[in-house]
Image (cartoon, rainbow, N blue to C red):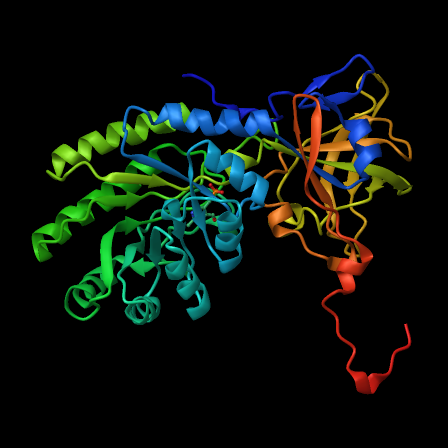
Length: 445
Ligand SMILES: Cc1ncc(COP(=O)(O)O)c(C=O)c1O
């Protein structure tokens, strides 16, 4: 089976240059660290475009496929611009993500709005900007959206998000398709929702069904199981209500290779399984070939990104571990402390060194759990060395915080030996810019 770009552990342009340093997108990582300071998120444009192309090619045999990049994985204006130029749509989950893709010039009809507790303001914003589809999660939202659409004298175009009762083998915090989940309508609630739409909610247009099983998934059959459930449900709703639904959204979730033990399937393999299953259910349930939406996030952006850190202090515990601390950690990458996520790293300036040691790569934040990598063999480290942690494109910057009042890092886009800032580093002033001292508390600084 053909390999896809998201199966690699490193960006496709990663190599060691003549100075013995690692480079990505033709840019020496040590020079990037010097020029832009660390921690620094680095995003490789060639990898991003390559992965978008893999998705388009892999699904070309089923032209009714729509790839909607799940922008929760990483949402900046430059990323939205590139992904949109590659022809993909967007899955968004907040007013902030919708506004970001809007400001990046994205065609709003190719945007889908998801989430289990969308606010009145967010839904109004989505309707006002002409967001293409809203995936409705619950009865409360259905009623609210009908009211908002009525106010706008329009109809809201929706999918119903359902929980298909499929469990995948990933961390429990990133499973979403099992029955006891906070997301979506239970299968037993679908008929009631449909009846409300058909009888009371005149400002709602129902187009289809949506499900999302979880994230960092390596199992391939799970998507076939999901399509079976969605197609069967579409056929049943037609039979019971005479309702012709022609859209299914199977969510995201495809995994990536963080460490050597991760073996994500190829996008081409997944596409094959999905298309075969679609053809099978179209015949089995005698339904019109549906428009099919996918919402990959991690598998599009993770491999494109690395994070650079500078080595600072270290501590050898007598007869124990050696901790080496870098200038970032859980505030720029909360995944290791949140889900015990594992990463792979190299030293950007020491590719040629033979002397290696086993260390624990620690962050700089005031939590014992702030460990980026528990155990890794790296060339013997010294203060000032530049560490490159791979596969940090997804759910790093998008989950970053200002914990300990530390500024969020900058992000640079690299391509053809050029590096451009796409997110500026926060300043100390940015950190206090939203703080207010009431007049009565007097302050002379
Ligand atoms: C509804 C929905 N779609 C898509 C995604 C993206 O998943 P992934 O980044 O694993 O592809 C998520 C992630 O949680 C999600 O909740």
